[in-house]
Amino acid sequence: MSAEALFPRLDPEAFRSQAHQLADWMADYLRDLGHYRVQPTVTPGEIRGRIPPGPPEQGEAFERIMEDFERIIVPGLTHWGHPGFFGYFPANTSPASILAEMLTAALGAQCMSWNTSPAATELEQAMMEWLRRMLGLPEGFTGVIQDTASTATLVALITARDQAVRRSSGRAVDALTVYTSEEANSSVPKGARLAGIRPDHIRLIPTDAAAAMSVPALEAAIAADRVAGLVPCGVVSTVGTTGSTAIDPVRAIAEVCRREDLWLHVDAAFAGSAAILPEMRWILDGAEHADSLVFNPHKWLLVNFDCSAYFVRDPAALLRSFSASAEILKAAYDDAAVNFRDWGIQLGRRFRALKLWFVIRTYGVEGLRAMLREHIRLGKLFADWVDGEPGFERIGAAPLATVCFRLVPAGESELAGDLDRLNRDLLERLNATGKIFLTGTRLKGRYVLRLALGHLTTTEAHVREAWDLIRREASEL
Image 1 (cartoon, rainbow, N blue to C red):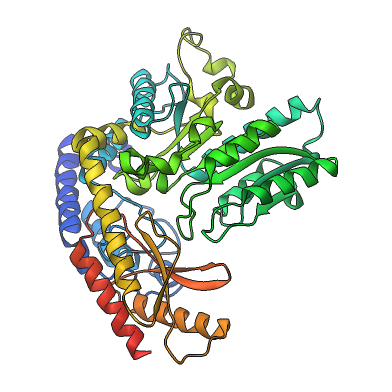
Image 2: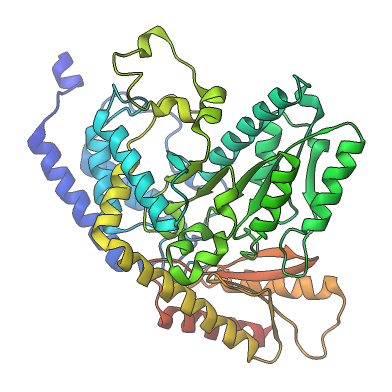
């Protein structure tokens, strides 16, 4: 068989036909998404067992590959865009973002520097400026699109580490300490470890009744470490904790960091999008004094995963930690252009700015605000239902469309373990229906259920159906 038969060159007409088939499939999927089970019923290893152990020697037809996609892959997916998906956090998408991702894939652009993709670099600069203005951050902030908030936080902690080592006359990294809330995302202590901070030097600061970082406890921890001869390095404050969307007092924490000469990073991965609402701008109060901030348009701003906006006050500090060049990368315009390869961990970079551009232009800032307002309204409505229902208890203030609650039936044992088991059972029953999907967490020692809103397709009717199902399953327990 000829090489041409084994490895056919690009056939634009065949591609056109296949792309039309995919577009039809995607449109049908988005239309019918609410009819799927939110979470599949498969068991570990079941999907892999349907896939041949080795690759095919000969190429296969597109139609056969699509048949297997529908037969094997789709039934094993958790559908994050489902209107009944209320777990974890929103991981949104939108038609505009999907179309932009298709263009990104077709272009195959490698965006590590201005020279490799001038338009991609300059569009990214423009999109970060658009986001800065939308959030109301000061002009001194500039930014870059990272893949995830986990990476952005690691970048911030590495920069903070290097700053602290320089300021402490070369004290070893072994002496550095980092501070964050006990409710912070798990990526924060993980990032600190990856940045070289000793695990026993990562301080998880206690929280107050609202699950926000205690500033007096932070100050006490810093003071104790200085007495012990350690070198406080940086603080990561959270705007919208993973568990309950609690909001740390950023302004007060910033004052501590200025006084102690510590790097302040604000993790607003999920909640940050809400700050484009004038009435919600208070969640970032004090963030103008931070050294860095991250939020994820791929969570609550209709942009496909992955797209994480990382802002920094002092780009020179970032470049000192991450700038690394080689002869092959050098170009004539390096002195006049931005090379985003030097703004983070990755050398190779995707064209993430394109989908951000498509989304913001398609919906406009007011369209995005309308969506956010509706989700926040639905969250408050659900919280009111919980508050008004005997046998249920709401945990936390729920300012950002995520409501934590638990079942506390009258006459049930008040032992914490009994209530925890009861609520775990309720969660399992709810998710087993396939109609909705929630997640649970532990807040102040209590196991609670979380209903996290934020998907484009979720309406008040879907939230009402979820609440009716929760009440029905609770009554049957």
